[in-house]
Length: 184
Image (tube, rainbow, N blue to C red; front, side):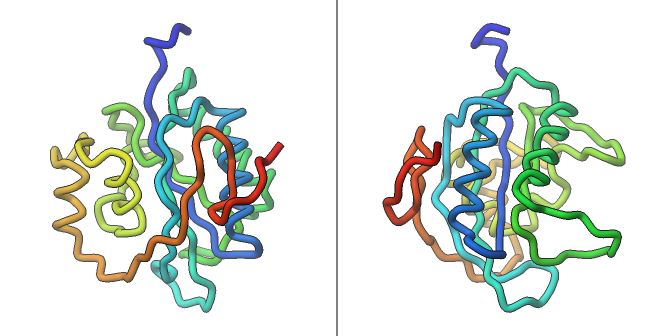
């Protein structure tokens, strides 16, 4: 596939267990090696858990990846990365703490509604921890269903959760937000 045939996919990531910075670093490196080129990387943001109560705060971020893979293959690779990094999926319903969570937020302007894959992410427009990093890397992007820019969706979002900037990763290397070493 030529570079012009590469597709743009926005991924959202979050973690609230163990070494949260390392979890994000490892996820970025696996995404780069297994899904595609990281073309935009948001800052890292810290938030309270969304949808459940837990003492551990989350680190969240968004990335734009250029990929040659279909949405179904990206999903398989995302799930594989989560498993490699130690995520286990239980049978209980609802939200819980996790070592890593990687969501496909958007894939080009595609709209997909299958039991295993929904694009755009159905809760994207309701979560500040998704919208703030997404607006940082692509404020002019348009939600393909709601036909509004990400910046407008953020203005209209009713999520009152506090979100604070935690740090940044340098592109294209996987660097600690606090200036650590490249992940091999």
